[in-house]
Length: 291
Image 1 (tube, rainbow, N blue to C red):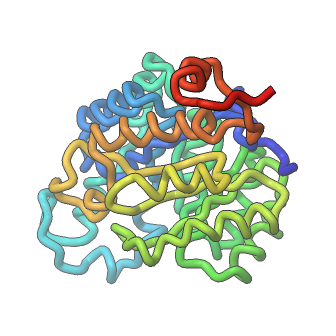
Image 2 (cartoon, rainbow, N blue to C red):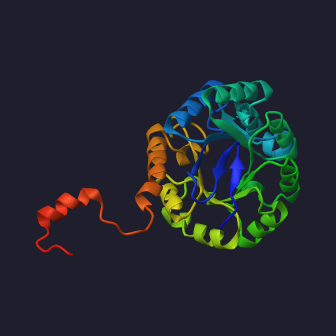
Image 3 (tube, rainbow, N blue to C red):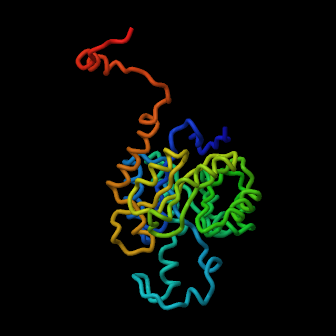
């Protein structure tokens, strides 16, 4: 049986309730108030944690990328957009306080070492390695040095690249997330069955980070053995932003969490029994009774 991972007292592993993460990411569009509304939705749906994204803009993007023309509600360049979407210390202090008051965990995927140090100030329960960062050996090692559980997304990665990242991180305190990095993902790109191979290959919990339009694949991932599920959330999929279309709105999030929580009940223990509720039906419909 794969090793379990503890995240702030919650066990992520087989035979434990699925750890459900609502990714806010950058869907807050630079507004702390919108971020709070999304946190509220995650709490009401019954999620275990919310996740943000943290970047040091000048380190993650080149000068040329930042200077590219890109009209947006923060300005006219790509740099205006990236800086406008990035929360600073005061905003994260407010988010940290708000999540604690609501009783929900929060953490972030950090895209550079300086961002890891920034988020470390808030003593996060774990760190997420985004699919885009899976091949950044230096970032993997630096994140590992913080001695926190690590959640590794594997979108847009080959099996060789995944194995290399896991060699660096080790299988202790690691949750591997199957993922397809298209927003939104089409059904023929989701490949939920790959979760089975990851479970056979690695001795750690396997999760699923979904970007599909609905939520059925996320539920099926749990049936297939995923111990954790991460989904982007939004107030409105038509809002401005690259991740909105691949996100779940309020009702979809609540239904997904409800259905995931029901998976262990529906799957049962695999033993065939005659339930008490069937006895009256036997008496009503059976013509011949077994001894």
